[in-house]
Image (cartoon, rainbow, N blue to C red; front, side, top):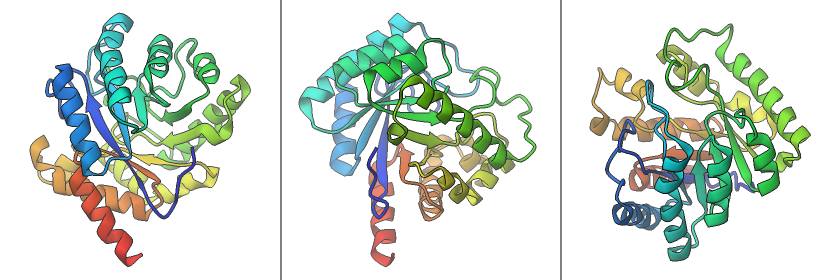
Length: 267
């Protein structure tokens, strides 16, 4: 993926789920989903990331057919209504295939293409792929996550997944990395990742930061509820960009865009 390092990319989150941690149920109706996507585009989103399965801690699995039924109509409608790049947030090869057919041009996988057939499917589709680090699974990931050195351990994981991708036929310049804030990490792990975010730039690939409205923000704000995490999330996105993030995945596009515009004015 070609990234202009002087202009961070804003990825707007569109969850077509009843149970996502932040916006579950808000966009479950297709008309509401398209309205939300168009609003994020108007506010300055560069990519819309569409997902049909919650990956919050403890989330229940969704069948392939249910996930396809949720996301494909929205991808098709958005593809025909706008020229915005669309990302599909999925770990399932068949969902990847159907989503790209419907108009998606990027796969955002919290399992880093580790599911059976995912590497081969992504290679055959020839689109950008985002590889996220997660310790465990969404059902178990927050049960005592442990690392020797969280940043070094994630870098070792990335090295292995990049090699696996290239071996499967995925061009290295199509790979994006995401250290996975909140996915099998304690608050201290997340803060260490944010502090040392620049170390992930050693691979020479774009790096994504997704910490919008997550529990780490709430914890730092005395257990603030999700709706009260907007300013903290924007601050986190700004720190991530200052530390090397090329893409920020956010729920609050306008607020993030405003903050990045101010940051760009002094850099």
